[in-house]
Length: 350
Image (cartoon, rainbow, N blue to C red):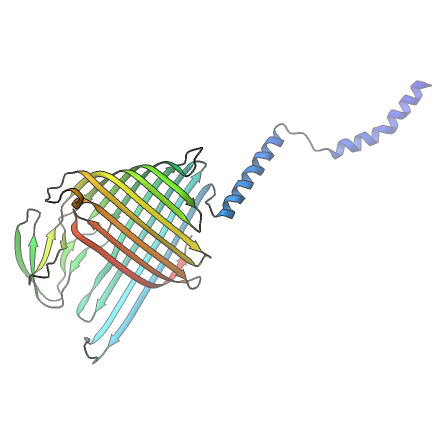
């Protein structure tokens, strides 16, 4: 009798146990751990995106800006008759990779402008810069905003440079040894100064960095360490005119290598996706150089300053201001300053 009751109870409970078993998920070894890790990674990525920091992986960007202007005057007091035409382009690209404590940033900037005025018949380049930059940052595990860095940078001009005058002029050529020769150039003549990719400036740096802010709204990067610079020329010349003399002084460029202490500060930010801004300052104080020069001490210091601001008027139009000021005494011992205010048609290609 007891056996019959037990068998009946077992048969009655069997469907219930089977249904309960069907409601349970299949057991996969390690699945709970994997789900927890994936959830944690997702929470980190969401938090990083919310704060404006770059998530792990590749981040690619490429934009093209085109600008132009035209003006014409006729019988206007104090102005030559004729038209003034200017056009240019700006290309900005970046390819950044981040993975854990590793951060590799690459940036490319190409700027070029051509201008024609009534006083000078041929087009003359009024802006020409190629700047390629790559930096690797390793963030310390306990202090993520500190660590070592390594950086390489290449700067040059893409097209040849010429001296063009609206009237006949005398030119005083000064070679690397200081010897001077006087020649004449005719009006509207393209007198060659530099070749394409001249001068070619290379810079390598390594040391320590501090990055207390790394968000879209505010980025601040400070680097300090050892820097080396190489200048490669092809026998080109630079205008070093002395206003107190009737002739135009043109000085021959020379190759040079320098090694010294380098400090750089780079700060940038954005506001509501429309306004972007940035500023940077770089100082290289060389304590070793192979150049045969009368400059010494602080006179050999290389200084580069930059300021950029942009306001997006529409998806395809932007107003940009760019200031560049540099002093590279072994190339030319004067401040080289360029200001550009551009209304551009901008296109995001990536």
